[in-house]
Length: 96
Image 1: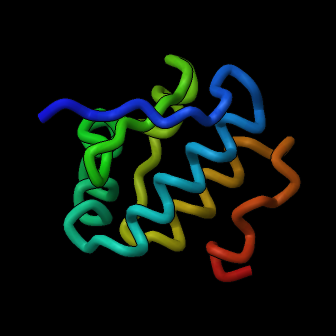
Image 2: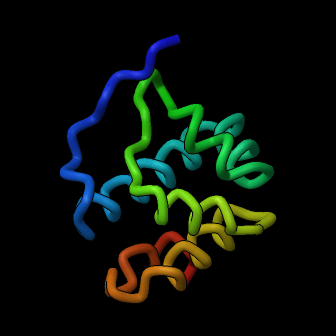
């Protein structure tokens, strides 16, 4: 399957925020993707979702891949902690 590009202005903080939002949205709507994200974040990011790829810089991919969480709320919380400059963009998703 060929993944379609998604123009999100990657390479910027705003682009990364959009990609993180897309990743979390995919995890909310798909139990299969959510389970993959929690078990193997690197694989989930590489697989994409809904025929679209996730576009993160190499360092961002490494950060996301390093998250170890058992629930999506924990994953979102860890994602939020890794990027404090995002002003708590995911605090609502993490149950705060």
